[in-house]
Length: 222
Image 1 (cartoon, rainbow, N blue to C red):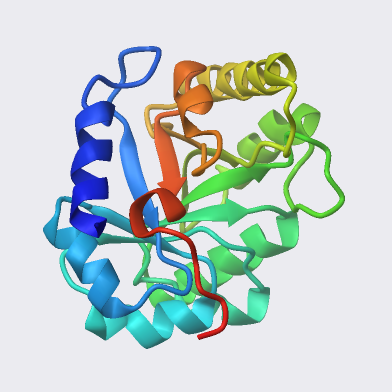
Image 2 (cartoon, rainbow, N blue to C red):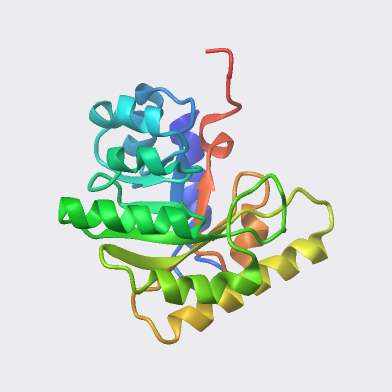
């Protein structure tokens, strides 16, 4: 089933997003076994994303052949386990985290690619900069040694109001383009999960994070 799901998704994504850009599919591997993840990679997945640092560490040596992303909330005291091992950190959601990431990267002598998380729905349950502060946050973080800002990440709120969701996507795309116009490092707008990814792609996302669409429903009892 996993291999079939991957091939079906990759075939659909081959057409690109609504702007004709290539789409990166990040398999969200929270709660998934190394065997399941390796099956997805064998089927064509090139990028995988973990939500929890402990799972990232536990699976690191058991999974092979894909770029590693960190897509969950990141505590500053867990940064040391990711620096130098992570292709892209999606969830830089506050100044304190960016500063500590930069400090750790300087100590380790590495440059870490990151995305700035925007709280596009102004939800108390989610981290991230308010949209109106997103560009200023980007300009500030882009000056930090050891960090390379590669774009933005956002999670849409749960809503049946598709006009609202499309509008939020369009606003994220505008922020992405404003930053990209003056910065060749800006390449990724990570927006879209298993319930809303088609809408997000239509409105300018070029990186999506899919879990259940690849692996099926999660079993949290394990």
